[in-house]
Amino acid sequence: MARHIANKDFGQHFLVDENILRVIERLAVLAPEDVVLEIGPGLGALTVYLAARVARVHAVELDHKLEQPLAVALAPHPNVTVIYGDALRLDLAALQPAPGKLVANLPYNVATPIVVESLDGLPSVQSWCVMVQREVADRFFAVPGTKAYGAVSVLIRLASERTGFHPVSREVFRPRPNVESALVAFHRATPLPADWRRVKRVVEGAFAHRRKTLPNSLELSGVASRAAAVAALDVVGLRPEVRAEVLDPEEFLALDQALAAAAAAL
Image 1 (tube, rainbow, N blue to C red):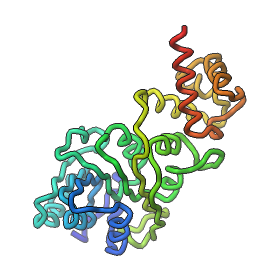
Image 2 (image 1 turned 60 degrees about the vertical axis):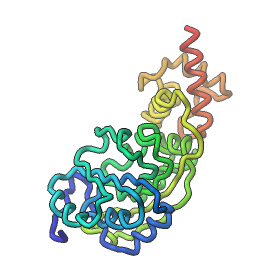
Image 3 (image 1 turned 180 degrees about the vertical axis):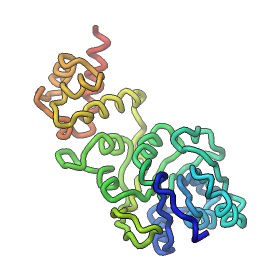
């Protein structure tokens, strides 16, 4: 199992330090009744640790070459189900019993889309504890006006509150990554707006051309005409020269509502 070569295309970095598993347990607030979704179990170090502490683990793995080592590692744990496939394409909302927590050492190359899509794609998930690149973790809860602040920050902050953060040494992984990592934990704070997909489109369009003014970025992204964006900004009390990076998450909600109202009036 230890000789398995990590697949760089899948962003694999396997956990090899039990101390970090205990940090994950603390940040995830694991309980015996929990149903946990793990994405990217790798060689199963975290999976085995979870299986001994929760009721059920759904583990999603893309790399079929890991089937044999995972089967060996998980043989003593009948409360683990391994699903092979792309987590971004599988219907994980159909899992039974439904997972209430997402706890994972996420593959670096898909960490951000997995988290963002899970906000509405996995409505049963109420809390997250994920290992990601440090710069990605910093983006998740970045504040307006900072370099790290972007569409991901807005969407995650609209849906959740951060409950924990822990920098992670490169030495807990094999192979040793070239970037710093961090654990970030957060939980749902408020229900998502009914028009979440529309809000998401506005937010992502606003940051798609972040060096441009907000009306220009929204127009270039195909979200709204420049004139409609200027009018909507005026409704929420913002000047047309504003850029996306200075709006707080609540202002994006107001902007989305103003744009929707303007479109309905046409």
